[in-house]
Length: 380
Image (cartoon, rainbow, N blue to C red; front, side):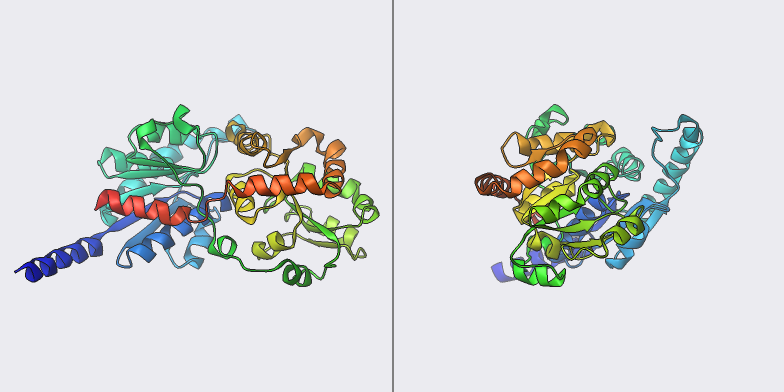
């Protein structure tokens, strides 16, 4: 009798799981897209029968990256608020209204069991409509300073996953779960050695290596600071892996072409190689960059982008600085201070060791699994 009952329960459970359908909304940047894919993969790992649909903004990078990862995506006609030109916001209300009609059609047709928002333009209308339909909604807030849209959505969200502590000033404490940020498996589970990585970049195994990253478009202040003092690296027996971003790549690539101590390109596709090769990292302080550097366990000098919404990059960096886990140079001081700070750090082994030990304590490698498990458990 018990065997029959257990079999019946298992059949019911499998039938329920087979019906589980999830919408993941958001995108715009790799900092939103890569965590979204990691969460989707973790859900599929734990529940292979789940069906997952992404919703993004037309014309944004998620429209290409999500299908590459093997998932379907629907695009909304939506744009964000333009802070630099108010006149460009004239059509914003009409696009927002149109996006709500598109969202209504998508959700009513797909009938999700839960909706997950990861940040980006498409998150707000999708979660707002799902909440109106009383569908469970989950938010992943990757930054240390929550965005306005997530704060509004958080009031009716089922659960809010955050990267750091102290987020109760933005969200109801009983809804918060500190999970960290989901990271690509190639980075979280990397076994690449330093020597393998340096050989990959055709650099010297006996020199300290500085990795410079500023995002896919590049970071103007960082790039200019590096370019103005390129000779300082060679003088101090340092070598560079320099991701310039695509906007000014041709200029810097031609400048560094004859320098054997510099690998320079617009983008690094295998970041696990770059992290493994680096002794010191110069980076912006987007949520995913911070998370990946915690996992990689590197001595980091952050130069936060000051015009990010709510200046969240500075907030992200300060969390680590306050724990003696990183250094911070203001964007407007990069030209004057950045290279000198890095050179000084390269000569201070004790400081490097302390930064590495402290940043490693902040690493969470299985955030995607924690988030997926919590979502599945909540809607079971």
